[in-house]
Length: 130
Image (tube, rainbow, N blue to C red; front, side, top):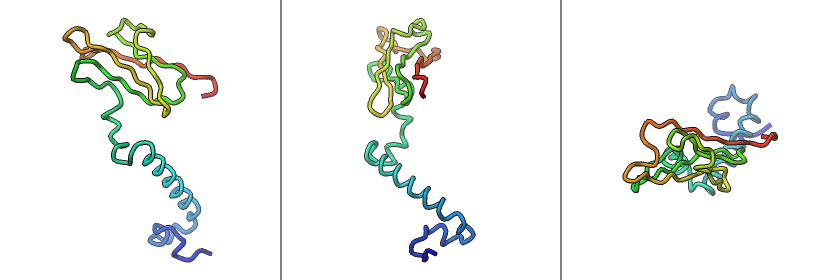
């Protein structure tokens, strides 16, 4: 039997959780692994939690549009929509080492690359193993 110094604080504070101690410890360990991974790859939980600033359609100062999507299982991806006549080849996306796909849509003259209210879709394919 474990002494209190070896138990998670949650089990010490809530004794009726004692039968679930191993599961709680496993979850704490998994959390620590993910926290270390997020710290290493994203610079901490705070920057990681601001994914809304770097994913989706993001208008740039020059009126181009940056589009980013996390799709680690995709083999290829492209941004399609009414802005490019649903052409899958017009805006192919590139994948980084973390499974994030991105592409840039240049401005159309003085207008944004994708007009407000446009219909857009991420066309992607995956292998049969995913």
